[in-house]
Image (tube, rainbow over all chains, first blue to last red; front, side, top):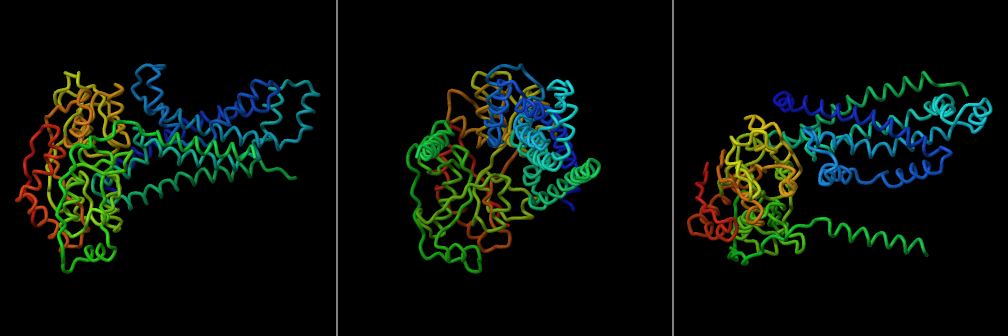
Length: 218
Length: 294
């Protein structure tokens, strides 16, 4: 308990940063991932090729490597100027870049569960591809996508800890701070694990309620 | 068949890539360190640690591997070198173990207490600052060296002359480390960069992404000595960091033995010779520490 109370400021700061990282990159990768999935099923060959290439190249590249690139190599290219919070942006970019490949595949899997007849029917009604996708296919796809999407988001939440090695002081840095201050890193890590579980529980609950709300009799 | 060729090609390519992952000049080998005479028939009564080492037939020492001049592993030869390594070897020799009976284990700062407490290493020598909080988990023998927080800057830098000139500068150190917490708490600058290792900080310094690296002067001197024409140490220490050998907490007999080995080395000039052969190469003289015998 002392380990937690004596260092409460590091825990609070750390987890606030973790949540910030998670929320920002979570929203961004949902958007980017969905766009990529739409590209992958679109009738335009160039879009399809781009989506496929992105997923092939990015999916499961070691995340540390992605972080390395954005934190160390990217600034050398001198594309962006001096940024005050550069490392935070680098972390968000790396997480978004990495996770959107997974989101894309999850969404695409969802799209594939929608029977082909649906898109044929909407085309017969005169909807454009975009309209058909956004008002017919995606709403139906969302339903089957919820469980794997929540898994992807949980993975994202836990992946944020890698940012600790790249100058973003989030939950992953707590262990280093504790052991440097002479507290037991083991107990500190147990607390960190407990807080991560607490963060994951609402996501699981959200998944359950969404599944219930969108469930249909088949 | 084609698939197999492709797979093999990928594997080989991957190996080649990982092989050249870490660049940087191999540490200065210099003259070979003095060979320690290996003591014979050493007995440490009532020491479970010593019995464990004896039973195993080799001693496992926890060290650092990324600090030139102190504890450094040459990426090409896999050989360890540095002041801390020499101290570790000295202790091993006086405990009666030959060089080939020594196994080094690189343990990063955050894992040190756990490694000692769990018995993964028999003792730890690696820029390990003695403090009371740590003494609750492990024991220390020493100090065998006294370092202090300092700043490493690029050679051409003239506006950083000490801690009070850091305002608005980008300062780098290892995540959560004491030096960077000091910088933060004393509000020396608000531009703090925390990375995984010192070598990453030094690379960033070289690439002008940051302005200074801060940590113990002993560590910084090692980097400065490695690339003399690129970096310099400011040379104004603003803290005291006594380095000790980390030992299992409950083993008093072992601690006394290690302390007496250090005392002998300080008295008979071995310590001085060791220093001159490693850290002393950076040109700065050392003051002998006084051992804490409690």
